[in-house]
Image 1 (cartoon, helix red, strand yellow):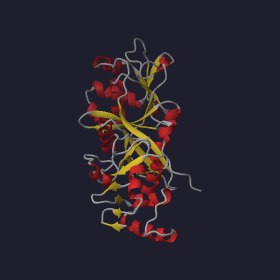
Image 2 (cartoon, helix red, strand yellow; image 1 turned 90 degrees about the vertical axis):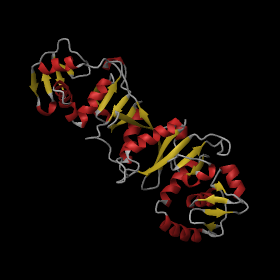
Image 3 (tube, rainbow, N blue to C red; image 1 turned 180 degrees about the vertical axis):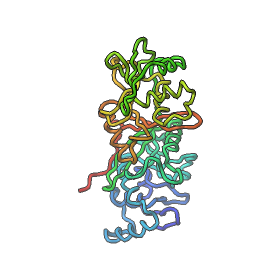
Image 4 (cartoon, one colour; image 1 turned 120 degrees about the vertical axis):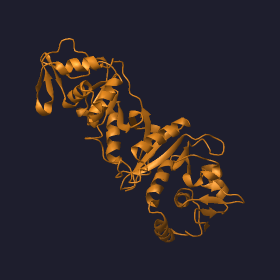
Length: 356
């Protein structure tokens, strides 16, 4: 086994079997298999392959220590690969994309189901991974920001593949989520300028942090605005900011929260507090009493999860009550867009073997 500076060349008697049965690594012209560090470890630990450089456990420890100097993420990436491959999936890593003729792909890896093979079948998904402590806002160079993540998921979707995100925690435990762009829409007619203006002229009482109380509630123009209380209408401060901003034609100066609420109203949605679900808003496609709220929307300016651990927890709670967890992203060219992070079906939740 020889290191080329980019991959290990393995030309032992088992190399053809590794590729043909498990699609590990990539075939090299002239014979042999190109393996990454984590594929060497996986082949030794799970396929019983003997490598001359790693004859025993002590040698493996020394080898891992040496390779960590070359790639500090080796341990995390091995956990990710193990989570995907132990259930039987086949995974081609980004180092080998060019060898298989794969172009224009920004993923960490591409996954095939256990009954498929890269040599003959189309892939099922593309994969990227994060540490659970990694910020949702991404790194300082904007790689893996939420905006780039949304773009990535749409690129994957355009190829008829699933966009999978695997998250690894400090114990090297792995969980799987799927991401996509959501387009939440309802059937309510959005209020027009005249209706906003009429609401702004109604007599109101300032309730401080509790918003405002509109004394008159006759012929209320839009059910999503405010909550009927004691014959009047109570509006949250965010809602009243929307009313005043639209009336004064100053929507460009609205807060992030109010801008999102206005966008949700324009989509025909009925917004209500998401407090009991640990989020800012729950959204109905029509009246509150006409069905459940399919969407939970966070406020990125206040109660948003800061890292992937918190996002996974929020998404898991949403899935548990049959709702979609959405994170608003402000696209300057297209307005608000919504990134959905969801748990996959039970047979697609890749996780690595439990260690004690």
